[in-house]
Structure formats: structure tokens, C-alpha cells
Length: 253
Image 1 (tube, rainbow, N blue to C red):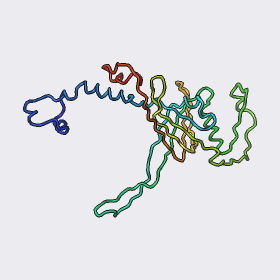
Image 2 (spheres, rainbow, N blue to C red):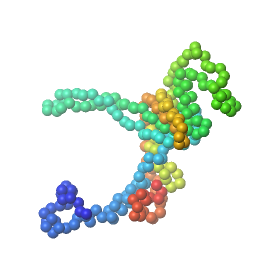
Image 3 (spheres, rainbow, N blue to C red):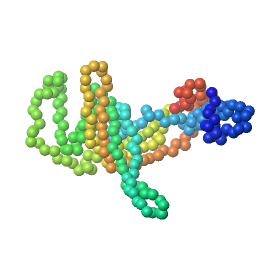
Image 4 (cartoon, one colour):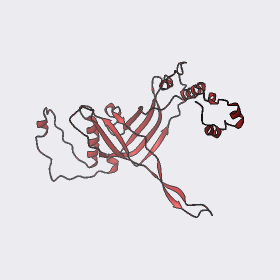
């Protein structure tokens, strides 16, 4: 099936002479050109995949595998600038929007929970530490009834807020790509003075069993970025493509 004439005319590939001789121009978009495109993508180390990333916290226990490997949902922070309007700079020019402040929005991270709820406990203790709240630990309790027994916390207790330097931490979000035998980091976002301000409710219900998840929302002051310029030669075999588009990426990706 050929391309519409208006599309070919937009590309500068249609004129009346070609129309008279009825020349088929679809050969310009041949399979070989697609292979060349995929080859260039392969030389550029393939395409970025959303399933490869690493999240780490500067807080004690924040670099443990129980935290870093169980983060199943993350995001690279966005960038935004607050703007103001000025008018009358030049004659005939409309209002001009100029940036004046960098804005850093919150991020949300999702974590799968193991049978000990290690991930939920980690962030809950971090949140409690903001208000200098003491967590209660009970050992050797084998039944739910034993967990609900015992002395309750003092009703007259108070919450004393700590200073930001005592509860904030640095958070690293690194985008990595699969390489030949190792993971290649491409970019790292450093979230400065971050802390969890909200832990979403964890739904529990009867029915089909699902892995328990916890979503945590973070404030942070600002972020900085580290770019990785990897000049290591890409080692791969000579097989570039096959007929399936999903397999058109290099074997090392």
C-alpha cells in the first residue's frame, strides 16, 4: 500500500512528473532502512528499559538488599520552574513568561513486602523518628492474641519534633541498563534532605492472595543529577536482527 500524495508532497517526494509515470515510492521506506535504524540503535547500546533501576537511602539500613531490591515502583524526578509575567519589554510583544524559582515536587516509591514486613517497618520507624516516637517491640509472641495483650502506651505522652538534620537523609535513584555481564548506570538523581511524610494505607482483604505492597511519599529540598558517559566499547555478537521487532535489539540489552 502506497503513502498518500499529500504526505509524499510534504516530504518533497511527490511531483507531477512522478504522478504521470505512476512511480511507486514505497521503496524509499524499505526493510533495509529499518534494519539500518535498528543497527544504529544497537550501536547506541539499545533502548532504555523501565525495569532496571536502583534506589538507595543514606539512612542506616537504607542500602540493604531488603530495601533496594524490593522497590518495585519508582520514578525519576521531574523538573519545573515557577514563572512570572512581564509585559512591555518591546513594542508589539505580548506578555513574556520568565522563570524565577526552581520547583521540586514530591516523589512516590512502591515496595514489595516480605513476610516480616521489613520494608514497612523501615519506613514506619523512619517516620516515627521524625516525631521522636518510641516503637514497641515484643519478642517471642507466637499468636495474634499475645500481640494485642500487655500495657498500652501512656495517654499523656507527647510528640517532640526533631530537627531536620536528625531525620532527613539523602536518597539516590539510579537508572541502570543491562550490559555485557554488568549493569551500566546512566543517570543518578540525588535527592537531598529527603524524608517520608506519608505512608499510604496498606490494603488487606480476603480473596485471591497478592503480595503486600507499601507506597511511601517523600519530600526533599532539591535534587542534583550525575550523568554517566560510558565510552566502553560495546561487545556483542554479529547477529543483529531477526524478523520479530521485539528481538531486534542487541543480545546484550
